[in-house]
Every structure is written in C-alpha cells, then in structure tokens.
Image (cartoon, rainbow, N blue to C red; front, side):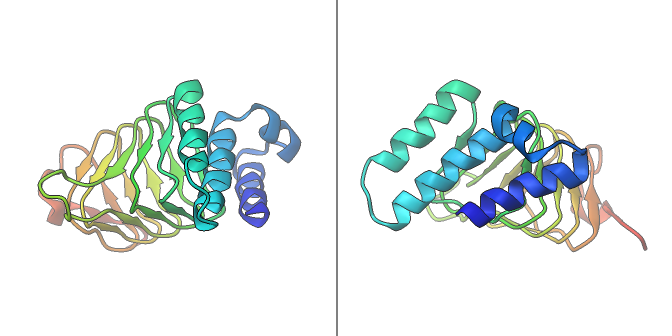
Length: 173
C-alpha cells in the first residue's frame, strides 16, 4: 500500500513538477487515492464496515466515489476528481490519468454485465464514461464526454464525434 501511494506521488512529481510533500498535503486526488488504498487494504484483511466508511468520507469531502473493492495499481493521477465514480470490479493499471466526472462501471443492463479494465498509460478525459466489460488498451486516450462501451486497441484515441468505434485514430501510426 505504501509503495502504491509513493508511486502515485512520484508520477505527480514527474508529470506535473509538484513536490511529493506538497501533493501529499494539498492534492485532493492523492487524498482520494490514499483513502481508497487504506479502505482496500482493510477490505483485503476482511475488516467489515470500515472500508465503506472511509470511502464515504472521501465521497462527502471531495465528491469522489471509488469503491474499496476496485483494483487500482500505483502511479495513478486523479485531476480535480469531482464527480469521479469507480465501481467495485474496475481495474485501473499504472500511469493512468483520470480527469473529473469520469465514470467507470457497469452498463446497468444486467447484474453481470462486467466492469472496465483500464490498461497502463491511459488518459481518461473529463466526463468520459466507460461502461461494461470493456478493455481500454495501453496508452490510449478516451476524450472528454465520450461514452465507451466497446474495447479499444492499444495506442488509440477515441473522441466525441466518432460514434462508430472503428473510426478511432491510432497514436504514432
């Protein structure tokens, strides 16, 4: 857990040139991730109720809802965070940048419709919604306000105005 928190702080320092100490005390995205990481660890130790209470504190204070059962690797950056929702079965891998009002969860069409997997190095733009059993390929960018319900390949860009997923552009190709 401490290693993952350090990775979160390190990526902020590298990408945004902000000291770890300053980020630790002032960055609401870091605060949300720390509370999530503590809650997730308590959940892994099968400690009841406390994980839920910790996630509710961050939900009330910052309007960030990260389910303690989600799997978030170290080195994640949350920009602004307000309105962020990450559901129970979501997996977010390293070096992912998540902007405000992003939703990662089920489609709601059935109880078992699955959760997204966000591969390493993705950028999820403000207001993006990634729903269902979807894989967002490594180093991909999901643009602002995009609703994504289908897999995308590595190094892809999906932007608003491209309703057919086959129209996305490749990065560096």
